Amino acid sequence: MPFNPLEWIVSTNAHYQPQRRPCLELKAQLDGFFSDELLASAGFVILDELPSPPRAQVAALGLDELLSPSAMGLTLADTYYLKPPAAGQLRVHFHELVHVVQWQALGTARFVERYLQEIRQHGYRQAPLEQMAYELEHRFALNPGSHFDAQARVLSLLGLY
Ligand SMILES: [Zn+2]
Image (cartoon, rainbow, N blue to C red; front, side):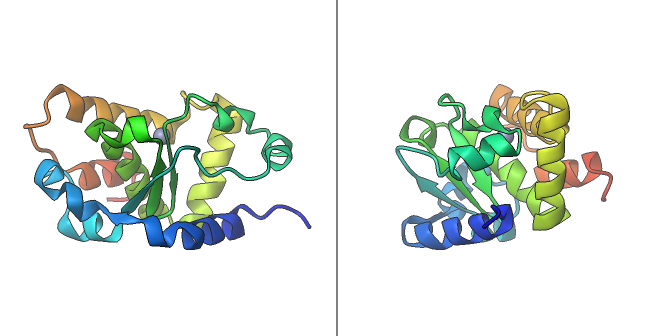
């Protein structure tokens, strides 16, 4: 059966639902960057190993880079997965929340198609959707007390505002 990324995303999130924690837990630190509505709809799961499709399937898609052992987080729709060392780093939460916003703005099918295409074309670190997440994460990390509307910024950068 051919690998279907969309089915894998849905089944993975369903599998980890019992361990999922709402991002509203981070409201005190992320207020002013993300709306309550976004923080309530997004959630995170802490795992020793990030969820991954079968390695052969990922390689067939030309996406080996995504399985880097150094990866600390992975966003799948409204849920992101973090390794324990990343869970205490607010900037990593911020980065993954940018992906949640991108995902909501584009819709799952468009996000996945665009993300995979960008990784193939530019590589992981240079993919525009990643650059956006790193840029906003960096801005937050430099000055966590200086609020900006991260959701509006994402929509603007995506050309969707
Ligand atoms: Zn990222």
